[in-house]
Length: 376
Image (cartoon, rainbow, N blue to C red; front, side, top):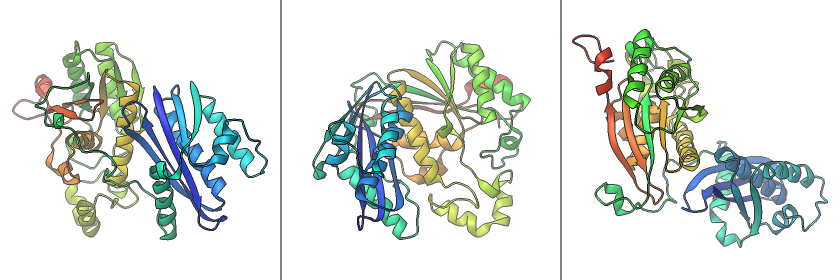
């Protein structure tokens, strides 16, 4: 795997209010896989540039620790020092350079390339966004609008023949829990499956036998890990945990029904429904969830290219993966229904398009449904 890290940093005063930005992309497809940015208080340009490099290397390591990496920066100083051609004399630079060197040593290879500033616009923009956010008393957050992504090719319609072998994700929602049966908000609370939920997980395992699944990737929460384990026993496939596939943190609303939240927090709920950047009290916004789910998707597409991956997750992350595949607006989240134990399938192609092949498939759950009722 080959990755490109573009990094930059800036200081408004040198020293002055400073920030950094970094973007990691696939060297083959050009797809942006991760973005990082932050304000770092008062610092020099060089310190900010090194912080951008470190953030970019950390992001690349999370995606593919054994990758071949090319770092592109418009800082001649950082490029020459990290290439070993210039000595590092300034005391503020030495610990940062050592940290970057330790990160770089974990990859298969790392090379540093100087590029002119006009070719480093992505990282420069991220650094300035972080500094602007800090000046306004905000914390930088990625835009939910993917402005830098090119328009998808005609193949996204699903009519044109694919040009590459896809990475296929089978999206399995965990089985029934006490909360799902009562339709309560279930976020990062570690609630287990019910007996029915375990039976649903086993039924999913039986249905997935013979589907050629290469790996199971699960949310870290108990209900998804239990579901993944039941499936793994049926199909004899390894299980990996991906933190970013966890459910949205619903904060103070955890364990309450929608009606109870509407009664206790009417204004907060109205704001949450109207704006994806609004979080429940002491919780997480859908915009923040989208960013980490997008990161999780990008990791999967890098690590398991052209493989079939079973993703065991929750309502919100699965809906967001489908929304990303469809290039749909945020309101699409409220127009999809996912039963517990349901399966959805998305094919992701390296040349850009994604195709949703099924949504909320529950045929395998008929044997464990209560007589006369749909599976909850």
